[in-house]
Length: 147
Image 1: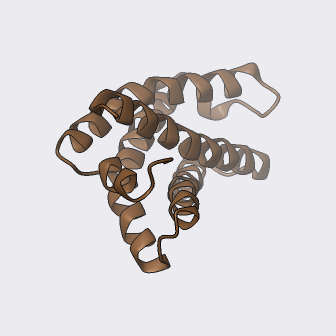
Image 2 (image 1 turned 30 degrees about the horizontal axis):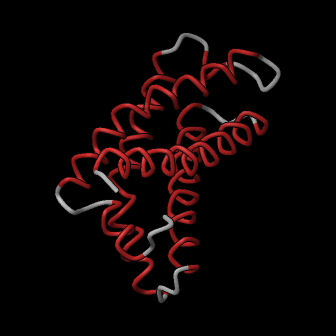
Image 3 (image 1 turned 90 degrees about the vertical axis):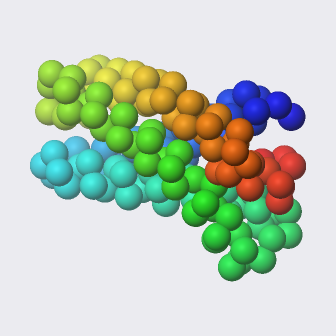
């Protein structure tokens, strides 16, 4: 598989984990009436949790031991998730009214979806650079060809 294909897959993987965590975190924080900082912290924490979890599941299915899988997941995903979360949350912070929107507001859902879509681009570039150097998801892919 070529560098661009692997980076594309890695970025979609990251988007999936970050999307699950980000949406769940923002929904819960909005529902609970939390402020901006707490909402973002919960969403980012859950994005990392689900991003790592998706990689761990794939590695466990490939027969990777827990200790090795944890190390591979942290190496494969940390910079990718960090990039996606920085860009995604920066977009939400500068989008007028996005963090004030309620769960029933179209702005809540539209801004969250667009912020994640915008974050995909820089995250792809990070993944491509890492994979090109044999790092990031190239490490996970070496242990799980279905990843």
